[in-house]
Image (cartoon, rainbow, N blue to C red; front, side):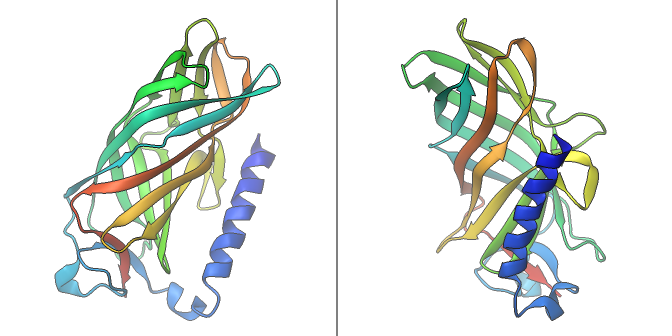
Amino acid sequence: MRSRKRLAAAVMTLAVGMALVGSASASATQYTVLCKVDEAPCKSGNVEDGGVKIAAKSTNAEIKFTYLGVPLSVTCASSEWSESFTLQKKGNPRLEGRVAALDFKGCQTESKNPCTIGVLNLQYKLLFEYQPGGGWLVLTEYSNGNVPGAYAECGSLINCNYYVSEWDEELPEQSVAFLSVTNGETFAQFHAQGVSMNEMTGPNCKTKDVYLYATYILSEPNPLWVSYVE
């Protein structure tokens, strides 16, 4: 599994590196912030103060996997998360937040069988990292050993726990999940583009190749963008 994490990290590093071409000289002095206006860098009067809670919602969350060799998926009518973040500290280019709540509702298989999707080991640590046009979110454990995860119960078909299983060179001892960030016209959006959840346990866990897809739209405060200060 470690090799899979390193492969995911290598792909992510390549993508970030391509985005940073031409701006490497500035990257060492950039500190990620949440900004009340769409500007980079963010002026001091527009930086969102720490302690503000933000929330985002998805209406297209989907978990794809294979079950006994057959591709299947579970879709959810909605998924919402909320978190608070702390003030940026000089010397750390990432802005730290804490996911306090995350849920999935109205979930079912392609054949309309209802599923219960829940989360494991809340709360989670969330690290914002600015890149031109948006950036990345790195989701990882808030307390040591409590890897972020989810469980799926779909009748007698699936009863399984899944845990994030990607790797970040800055957090070498932790399993993480990456979400990309895009700054839209009025707010930021957060994209789970095949988040790997291939650490599994459970009494009926015959699935593999498990990935989460979703786009989370910022709901409060609105507007808000991911930016940086120097």
